[in-house]
Amino acid sequence: MNCPFCGYFDSKVVDSRDINDSVRRRRECLQCNARFTTYERWQVASLFVIKKDNRREEFKVEKVLAGVRKACEKRPLASGAVEKLVDDIEGELYRMGKTEIPTTVIGDMVMARLKVLDHIAYIRFASIYRDFADITMLKEEVDSIAGRADLPNINQLPLIPREELVEMVNNSKRGRK
Ligand SMILES: [Zn+2]
Image (cartoon, rainbow, N blue to C red; front, side, top):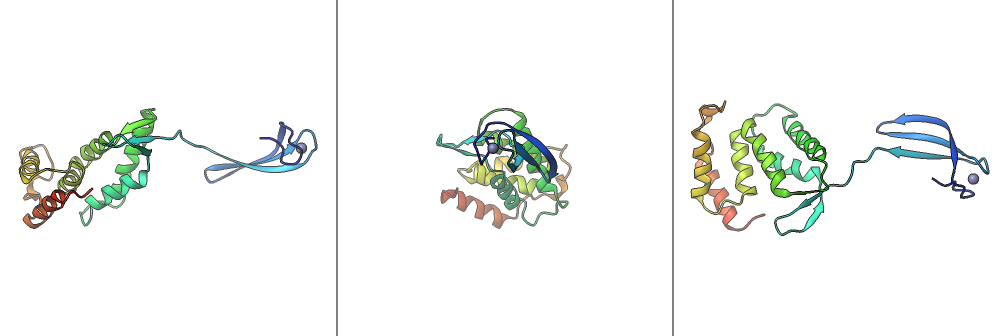
């Protein structure tokens, strides 16, 4: 970084201190000896998501968190479970080392984790994300879960109160996004 006083390109660090997730460095210009401060912070490469209509937008973990939170509303989950699920996904996305990821990949990652965590949250998320065309598809999804004996919370069936199921289907018919 050039000296803000004389524009010289080089400086020496006279003091360095960690502040939260950044480093504060006190620098001294090698030409005019003026002192100035820089803050350096770690930054991951930008990640973009490719939406269904092929538009790209910057990946925002808050959006994933909001979607998962909504699906998990009023579910008896351990505190921090939702945040951890989303943290895991975020970490995995960055580890993939790609600059662009289809939203469907992220959606599938959420679904895979919710399926293990909580069936109702899973179905709620699926009903929004997959945009179930009609109740048959949704029912098939419910049945396919119900048929899996290896899932831990199988005795919490029926998965969804009928009213909620009907509401979901009506919402998806209205083309809610
Ligand atoms: Zn200078």
